[in-house]
Length: 198
Image (cartoon, rainbow, N blue to C red; front, side):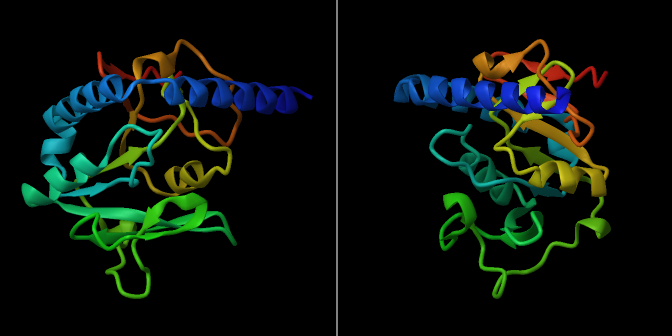
């Protein structure tokens, strides 16, 4: 019963914050994205990382395309995920640009796994994973899109993680369950929050 209530509360929060993002003006989103970009590239863990794992943002998400372009420009390798709807897992592939990506599951841009270089995450050192989310809390927990792709991935690989969201998406606490994996840092347009992971 508790799990069902948590699921319902997550769904309600997801819907509410999705609507809040839809209502953002283009100017507000652009300014917020720019501030978040400046924060992430200033992070010590970003600067020291040789590889950046990141999703390719949709219109309602914090822009990651500028992060991708900048990372490649300064000599980092960038890998983005391809999702498997069959077993609900993520596999990362290296890219040289956001150009040439194709629309995959959930209308998200992905590399072509048949022609792209596979990124073996188990062999990586000094890398950072940028994690999507609709809502985050101060403990680092997140509400994504309800499929659990990233939670399964983060349980398998122990890595430095950062979540990106807008200030109104950062709450004191959100519902969580045993499958949820918190991130280490949360970045908004106004602050960098080290999660309390409690």
